[in-house]
Image (cartoon, rainbow, N blue to C red; front, side):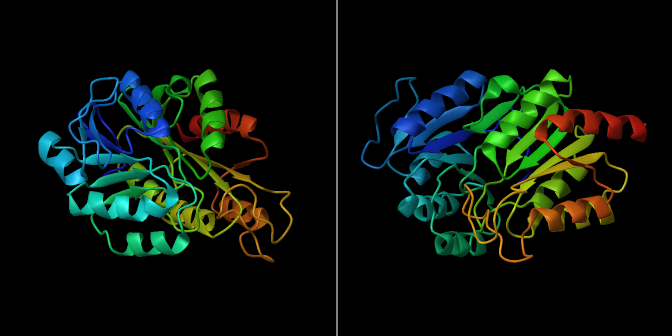
Length: 292
């Protein structure tokens, strides 16, 4: 399933009657997202304050609404079951906002749900500006345009996008892939999608310490996207070895997962790396100008 959203994408929300699910559902609807219902076991037949139908199961919701996408707001111990339930019901796109999902749970889910695109967990979701928002992103900072953005950090996404928007650089789709060690969609997965997207003309990658996803992304850009304007930022440069900062996956050990190794990989691939998030708009403008 493509990462791109449109106004016809039918979304259900698992955990729709909880405080977080209810609040963010109303924000998604206000943005214009086609939310068609939600799921909370034991509350089937009710309606939300906004008039959306509530179902006991994902299958019942899918059968009644034809939904293909789900956004998951459930406690960490139940997130894997929520993803499996969506998969079994035929959902092809799942955005898991939940933080603190056990790593072994996600390892099992990612390996046994082929055909269902998973964004997250521990992520802010994604947005195709002017079309649809699925997750917890603040829609007002985004502007429709041709810059694709991929980030492991939610708050960094909003900061960078605000700078891009203020600089007149609108976005095609922005994806918060999540900060956990095991996630459903990686930088490279998104790069493949952006590579074939006619709307996306340039890309911003916001990485952080831990893992090798950024190095993989740099290699993909080098080998498959040499003519595409790409800029990057890597957070956590001052992180002490062995310390986890914020995200579960943001941990380094020795020379593994360091900011320095990621920055070096991007630069070797010809991708400029900003020292600060505020530098990204100017760097991207330079790359766009040189590619004309």
